[in-house]
Length: 228
Length: 256
Image 1 (cartoon, rainbow over the protein chains, first blue to last red):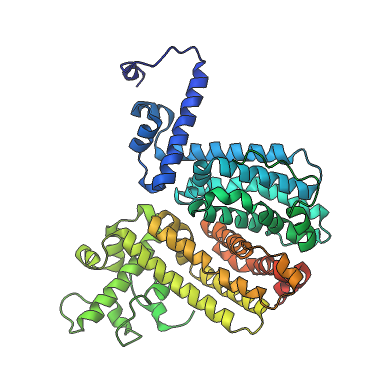
Image 2 (image 1 turned 30 degrees about the vertical axis):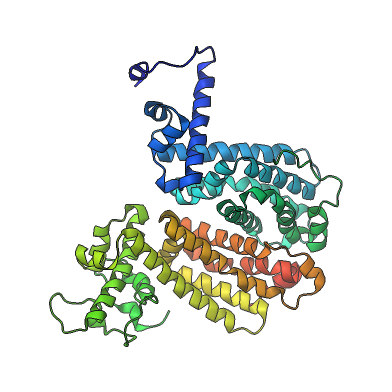
């Protein structure tokens, strides 16, 4: 435990707050897990792999996480929270619902493109990582469901739309991303923006209007920079 | 569900009191019985020792029982908690017999998965083909899928929840199985006016299939298979809307 870890000299002086270091360490372990998973798949990854990739002591791993599964759930939570934060800050400022969806989706796809390993952890491997993780995966989709549901107010036939529409729409979007993240074209996920926007908007607004907004012929299309 | 197979006494203490697991799994399409399509019920559980039956017949029967045994064991313990001992106990065969047929639990699971999916695909395909009009065919296909999964909750769980934790080989097949539904929807593009086609993207069908499967698998995951059949109108409307527009799609969805 603590006494044991002092036998390993700590590099440099630690003037940074303890909490900061701890947080930094967790993120480092989480990133290592995500990279290992992207390479080997969840099942094949061991704590030894994570420790090696993160270049930390095994003890340090266990000071932060009880087991691989716990580390995985933390990774899922970390990445999904980060992605949703971006969605909320991109979409929150926009008043018009269709543009709001477009902006939110842009932010989401940008995150997925920037962090493919973490995205894969959340959107592919989480389905194979046990019930807790599947439950988390499903719950994390709820934020999108709420965002899409606002479309019922602007839709001319909002009252007639099937109850499960939003659930199906987000399931469709996540499935497309699942396919891309496991295939050879993960770096081209950003290109899906127009078609996914159109897919989401069509049931509410009809194909024509959805297409207009999706192809960016409106002036509120958000800046797509940073997708590098 | 029809067929005598439903009542085969595969396991005395297993889950097939409902007839559920064995009815589908005892018909293993990857390895159909030599010439007799139906086993006499008294032979479904072969007595130990000599019985004068052809070798191949016995081997086939064992393989099917192992597959059914796996499905029962997984329904009871989940994939991760299932051991080869569980499988052989449900199948009432020896451990050695297990290894004559499969190298591992994963391999046995893959065989079970394939059996379930073949059955499911057959039923969906048949239902789809029986309708002349594409929108009705989609409706019939979805109805057949929901009916199958609602009637066989253990197999629904095996194929939609446990498959994902059963290792990369099965996960790959799971992905393929979902993608194999895409052509049913692509058929809807045929004869559609240009302005409708312009509104469809290369990934429309994939997204529709993904959305449909996610609705289904959520309910299977939550052990709410009894709700599956009530999803029919929603799923029909959801999948037809890009082709027919929402008013027409809703009409097909809500007909009875």
